[in-house]
Image (cartoon, rainbow, N blue to C red; front, side, top):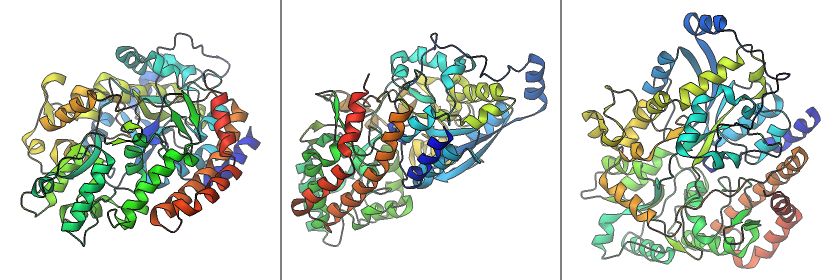
Length: 539
């Protein structure tokens, strides 16, 4: 096993694969799971538990994926409240999101300096191999220690969803975030006031979007109408599905270069498919005509992104609804009005990024299981993140401080309601509520309470569309050798894809003239073999 893990380290260091938003599923009450007493740490006695929880704070270290638009703060109300309420010291280590997966991979591969808990993870991609090679605790073996998680799975009816995250050995290795239903939280955002000024209709297709951007450019020659937040990842995951593919660091498959055919119910080599060729040709056209921000290849931080849109240097973006308030509040442009729109129709229909009723969640490195108080750590994490009380803190803050009322009648304080950043963003930045990294329970009616009637209207519109939000593709059931082989193929393929993708978009390579060379390179890197591994091991 050590030899196998060492072999993975080289692959891990060559990629910053981000697996976040594309996590798979969650767990049932696990009535079929059994705990092997030969490997389970000795159960703590009631006397020991009482002494630890009342006299000594339980110390837990955690990796936290830090986003520049929502910088972590140990002084957040959520962090302080759960530590006080549950008598625990949570030692978060914030890691920039761009470096997060590399840091996680290194910790899991070597076993050195690993934290007790790693947040915002799944067992897509490399993590599957690491799990099967013994680097991650098979948390399903300890389902008796996660009663709150089990109860939420049952409450939301997610038993079948949880089954889909089990690996080849029949176990699952992380506690996913749980959703009662997915919701449309981000998409195309553009200047509604300019649409009216220029006599334009709201775009329904990508051809419409192109024409809108062309008009914006003609009226404002020095502008780059479409800008991007955090590099191309957000744009890609929100627009590629309408072209029938999902690729890159946020690929729904977790592979980076494979996509799921929803009609044929199988994987295909999306990175070399004509569907991707059509997509990247469209993006390259936007870039060549000065309609796309030339800084798009590198992550654009939140402040620069805001300034571009608030000052009229750009007029459109792909981002999240809660960010609109900050854009309008920062701008000095009279009458500025941003609006978010439903998914645009492309060659494969109108689709947003695939989502599941489960998301990236919590895993425990094997090192954690060596703690004498391992059971207490697991039980505490389960209580903090998956209990009804804990879930409300991460979502809403503290009753009487940030809000009052229940799910169907929540009222926020005047300070939050009147904030120029809007309720959702203010709750995130100031109090730490609604962070994808820490909020494990997502109840739609609670989330809608943070938005205005306009957002509810948009969600209803999307809900009436034909499968606008598709499901997360199934995870192949790979054994440890297959997972290792897939992991070794994924890294060089993803690296090559990102190099060529950037070249195609920026015009240093021609989609028309250099496509065959690109396809040959990807085939030489065995993309077709990776595809076969995935399809041969579907459930």
